[in-house]
Image (tube, rainbow, N blue to C red):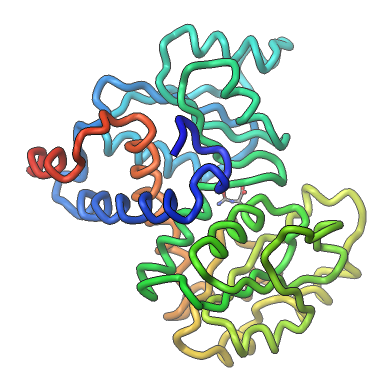
Length: 315
Ligand code: NCD
């Protein structure tokens, strides 16, 4: 892996597998009585979130704290950005303080890559516009691997607002790199203008897709990113593409139901579906912490052999 994690392309199958294996160590650490190791002691990580977030921010923050890093929360709404300070000046100011890592979320695609050219800090993309959200893909792959052992040969139905989804872009790459077959299930208006280079099949038949899927992955209807009316009505969308209670109950009991959150209950997923035994939405959140520990450790750690390092610190 390079000095940054901006796209799944930075990892490839090998890099992904390495991070998933590393996450197993951090899962063990997270289960300890004191779930903390000093491997990033003395390192400082700043959060630069220009867009709202609940789970991604809290999960990065938990991950950093479990690795004993110091964290700095840069609150855009109370910063000099409000006085018109440019992105570059903001980043250079933070860089001048000797920060080791910056976790960035921004509404524009390409901002994390741009920032990586202005600072020596390691950059982690926590979501840029419609472009990518690589740590979401990582935690999703980890959750599937935990349940099924491997992604190879699994059929994954990715359902909903693909067009506006950075999760879809990162997840398609990661799922395909690890050998899964991905089918997009969406009305044509919610697909990107071109799918050239996407290793996917496409269907509009949700029932058919559900019947064959090992994983049904629902995306949030991203109404805040839609400038025009792309669906006739939410009710119609739900009846054709939603994971309704009836569809969820007709699934093979081994078929996993996933969602990156935040969920629009009653739109893409019925209110009771996340509570079903095969829904792993809360496992995804828990795995967000361990996989982000792996990412931060790999980018900022000493590079020393991890196992001895963690063994010594066992409490
Ligand atoms: C996603 C995001 O913000 O990209 N959420 C998340 O990080 N868990 C998906 C979304 O907002 O729909």
